[in-house]
Image (cartoon, rainbow, N blue to C red; front, side, top):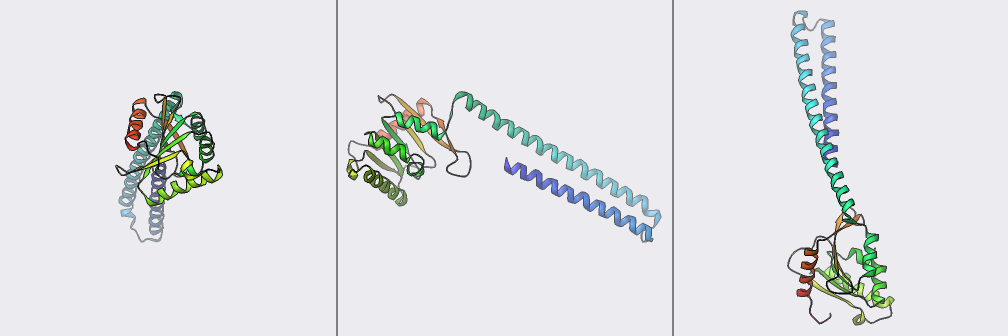
Length: 236
């Protein structure tokens, strides 16, 4: 949307520059006629040429503006329709609402590319859940930096709860199968079949500007099955 608006503004500037140049050309021609540099007999040809140029530029400019404004209106309408659909269906979940799901879950499965949420917005919720003996399973990239963050997260929680590292019910596995670009979370209720899944969507460039979209039951179950394949009965 911003690119389209930028193009419109650039087109407006370019079109304005063209018009200004044409007006300057007309003024120069008028001055030359006054001082006798342009013969009067050529005046009709000159004015006709300038008039035709002005008309052509005006038509082209109108067509460009009309196309760009219609494109912008169409894009805005599409975005508005999608947002309205998601709002009605309850598909967009804020991070604050997601915390409520996490607080009620007995087991939390997380696929995270960077552990950003877990060390920031959701840290207090995780700390309280660990204190209540709730379990966390993570799948993270096989990256030295991310694995270091996981180690520090576990140590920090253990320190705040006065527990040893091995007493913290947080397990993790690394993923070599494919790149992880966004965060997924699966909340398990009282039974294994009581599952609710979400995927994180960024709405702006900033990491903190995110919403969460409800996953289908099929996708949620498939992710859970993948977790089961990654994890065995042994903790880290």
